[in-house]
Length: 430
Image (cartoon, rainbow, N blue to C red; front, side, top):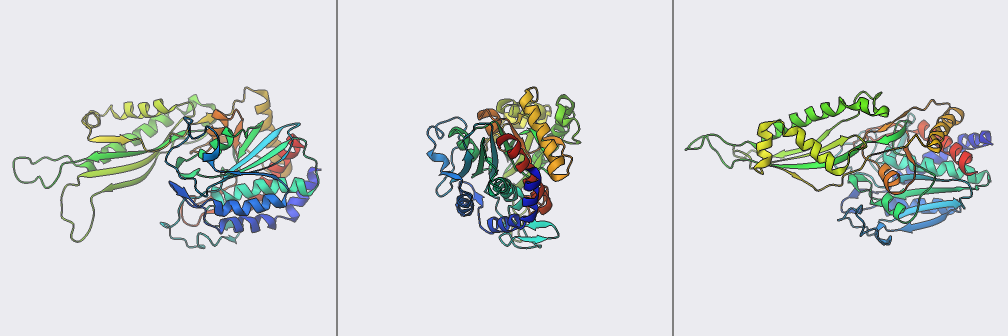
């Protein structure tokens, strides 16, 4: 029967190209607190209807008790931003969840050269367009896998759930958490984030930090006070200290089995720095303030409090920085969700067998040797692992230029991914 599935997927693979291009042609940009996800959900809903799936479309805010829970990220507006869940089967054997987020980052700050953000194109085995890699391609592969089973009239004894969730970007996660809160749990879940076909059985913890650094006002070259506090120089010292902290965390990777083989598992991203203004009529003066935004990460077992306390304890080893923090010159502003990490517990036999099954289907269905690794960035892994009592892995296609111009996804990976997903559906649900 798996040979029939493979033949179906190969013979109809243009369906993936057509649907990725269709879904990537619409604006589903997330610009907190609002977003445009329903443009994509409308398209997926029609696909679900064509597959005769049962459909549940709902706002995260409509889930009883979710807004009042500790994990709900406040400040979001979910007007016209619905989660979309399609499912089939009665769960007599196993339930598998295939999850992906439909929202994308904005594109207006990028200069695209291969195509335009909402004019996706297939060029040399790569589909270019905003969100094709992160992660509309993965969603379509999930759907295509289930479609192959349905179209071949293979009975589904278990249950297959496909989730297209909102508000994952910018550390949202309310979409997947709302699905969990509403009761969508299973024996296993797979998130189709772009992992370059690696099976990620662990996920780092992470958080965006914003730092405000105050400085002396005005020109201090003349008068009684000739020394000033430059927020730019303090920012430089702080960044150097954070880079040292990143190096320190990487030195601890051998404590974590899956991270040992990763050359550099902890990577801080310094996203923005603002101080003063360069213009023809801008006077030379000490900027009153410098702001930094950075994305930090740590290992999966580090909780919210320890995440910040460990970082602060390290940088306070610098006496100057400790003094600036103590005196309120350096202020860490808590504006973003702490994204919890997590691990798939391989001491549980059924979890270990699931990974073995993924590897076997990689070889059988896609002729690929899949490796286990860790997701080195924030995903919705924690929603399933920490709150849904659902063992989860992250497994998705390869691509490039994510969150940048000329984002692309490898078309051949989307086909292989569909084959692997279909093999797993057959093994566990048919």
